[in-house]
Image 1 (cartoon, rainbow, N blue to C red):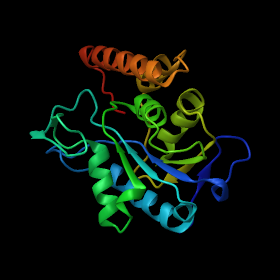
Image 2: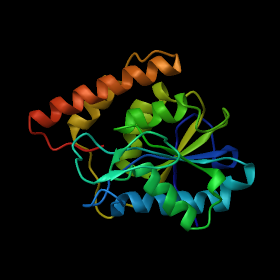
Image 3: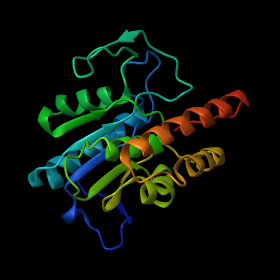
Image 4: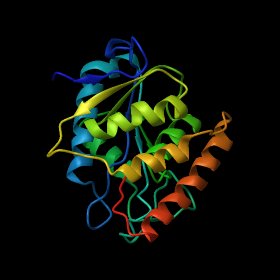
Length: 221
């Protein structure tokens, strides 16, 4: 498979990448499986890991619980989060299950299941040490989403080199301008300390997406 890349850290190529990051892109109507756009990200991530990254001993990190506007799903638990109950299955767990079903070793696939938007996806993946080391990462997403990640979010949320890998769009994927604004507001000026950065990003994202929902904007992450 040929992988189309988008520049992130200057000079970084896929030959230097050790990990794959898959941001969330929504759940199905029942709140337990993936949208077609999210499933497309998983398919590209699986091929990228098998063909390019996996031999370097890295990981695929799947990120995301659900968007603040998503209230779907019945109670769901996992032994990996003792004592916690989620509403439906988090996106990260659905993505992880799909990757394992495609043949990836479970030990190579991590689920970050508490973030609620793209900024908190990246902040928690980095700050909770899901990668296990500081080696470079390839971020897998559709083109418009990658633009926001690589220009606004990753420079402030990741502490490692990064490059984008494009997932083909089902149609023209344009991002809501409000989404860009919220990402800027959430990520700007975050503390460098991981725990403080996670707390600040979570607090800002929850507040700003709640406000966006109240004013009736069509928003997504």
